[in-house]
Amino acid sequence: MRAVTRLATGAAGVLFVAGLLVGCGDAGSSGAQAPAATGGGAGCAPVAGQQLIALQDDKNLQNSDNVVAAINTKAATPQAVAATNKVAQALDTPKLIQLNRAVNVDRKTPAVAAQEFATANNLTAGIPTGASGDIIVGAANFSENQTLGELYKIVLTAAGYNVTVQTIGNRELYEPALEKGDIQVVPEYAASALDFLNTKVNGANAQPLSSPDINQTMSQLRPLGEKVGITFGEPSSAQDQNAFAVTKEFSDKYGVTTLSQLADKCSGSATILGGPPECPQRPKCQQGLVATYNFNAGSFSSLDAGGPQTKNALRTGVISVGLVLSSDADLAS
Image (tube, helix red, strand yellow):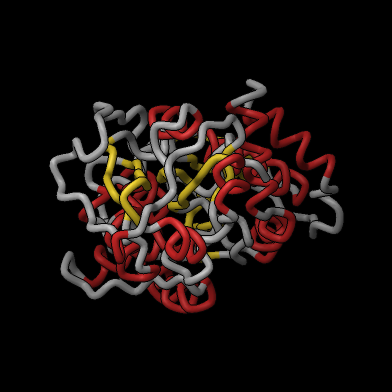
């Protein structure tokens, strides 16, 4: 799994940390003060169930972490840009969930999952050919990004390049390598890439620029990329960002499919929010739910960052709603 530093606005450090788990605790065990229930509402007690669904972020709390190709500008030929844009055009969040499920649940390799996706979606059709030379696709150290790297390998190979995929690590490692041209292409996430480059170029205290609107995010990201020698392709509609999940049984019982409905129907004492220990202090987690949706849980359970503890707590009826990632393989598409 990967840690969710997307919880913070403008986080410039490591985006993903493999294997980060924190101790599970009872409701309110994080040490943070549990939010007050609104109007003394009863809230919505947890409902156990196996199928998890992400509630729609209908007021756009989260920033636009859409998958987008980052290309070293010297390598950003028309063929390379067109090839990676084919991935963007074919990919959406439900398809990204299915790709993650193929790897994380069905235990296929990223290369096999990518090839099956490419075949099913006719991914190489119409790609401009005639390119030549070597391209190294860098990937972060988690399976989703590695699968995306394999998709880029497929389309870039179809364009005529000799392509290899190399797992690099976190953004603090692969972004400088991309700038220097040691690698030529990386699967990126728009808002997180913007936050990183913003603080790198404009300083650690720079005003955050990322937005829930992908067009606004890209309009800020492209000029910063130009300053460091990185060209960004067309963003896909696929997003890997913070999301809040419930069981299908919870959704059916309380009539909740959006975060607005969660706030309206489930603010109150019986509702238990689960997530990583830092969630109560983060603007994209509990603080954001209060500020954007006026959602007030009765208590908070300190678990992990979208990992097995949170998902197990949802399935076993320990928490009502939990922080996950929007492309998690366990979500219903």
